[in-house]
Image (tube, rainbow, N blue to C red; front, side):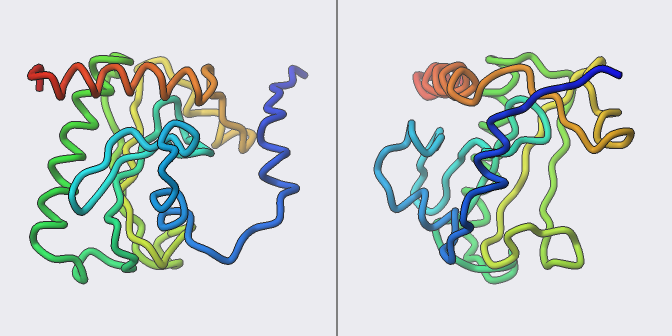
Length: 165
């Protein structure tokens, strides 16, 4: 039997879970690199998922703390979709995925891990990725450290902002 090691995950498992909202807390801090915030818009922002399903897993979230899309204003919904589109472009530029999974889990029954603050998951996919691992052994294989993924995606995002979108 082969073992896959992910020692970075133990810190999360053993850590005390706070009472706050990660989406509100991360954006309130101005250290975007430490919080893996790739882009701040007027009403929404994009950040890396600390516990990704796949390399480059992003989340697009409004600043406002609301549990569902229907509680967002039209400008918030529009900006979420525009940031989602730019996320695709940045991921394509930096990581060259073959496709994407995009999901919004609204409510615990739908699988929302943080049901109080709506967000969109953007998961890049490759033809030969290791998606079978969660099915067979509840294991995810993430081949790159978050700091490196952040660096690559931030550079791709900045390139896009300079007129390449």
